Length: 126
Image 1 (cartoon, rainbow, N blue to C red):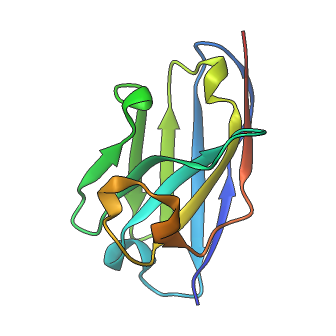
Image 2: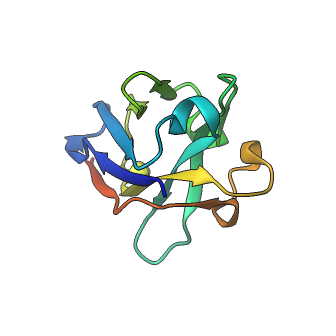
């Protein structure tokens, strides 16, 4: 069973950048074989999809992060990344990575993903 662990979160000022990482273990070729995604959840709000990438390199983003966030993966390192630039206070949330378990990956529905990591906190101050 695949295990995912996020890292790279922190506190930054608005306009700053962070790069999140998600390391996979327990499955030899998670990122070369599956679709995976980044999600976030702010206090009092539902978990929402941020970006996803599939085994063929196809990507999908929620509208509010297009042009600012970039999802990528290193299959050799079994690591998923989320480069976040021009961060805004509304990006503040716990960020999670997950692997697609059913449904359409590009719809970024959290119900279609599983094997959630513990998350990494991102805080953006104004």
